[in-house]
Image (cartoon, rainbow, N blue to C red; front, side, top):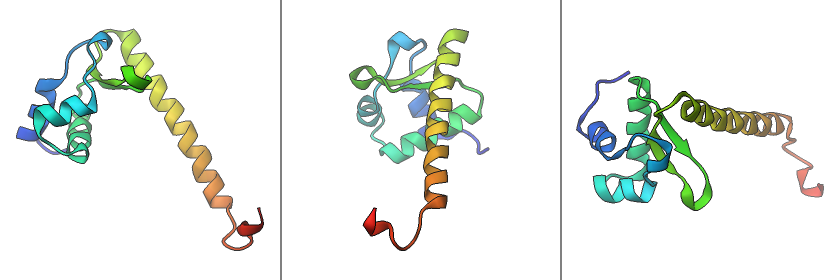
Amino acid sequence: MRKLVKMDLAVLKCLHVGATSKVTMKELKLRTQMSQRAIYDAIEVLRASGIPIMASRQGNNGGYFIAETENEKQAGIAQYKKQIATEQRNLKALQQAELSGWQMA
């Protein structure tokens, strides 16, 4: 894990505590003047530092926040578990995919 740097702290400063105080990616980009990729990287570093940053993918009500309660933390973890299960299905399908003959499918 790398040491927190100015960009990481800029993202942290924009985040709020509690699921009712989500900050969208658009807001993070505007407030930090960072790219989406840089924000993702900063969030990854902050999480690795022990900060429970959750991502809510609820359509127009989605965004990032720092979990305030165990329920918020567990709900955020459940979303990641669901995403992992989807990625595992995709990986399995790709591993079983034929390099030739797929055009006929």
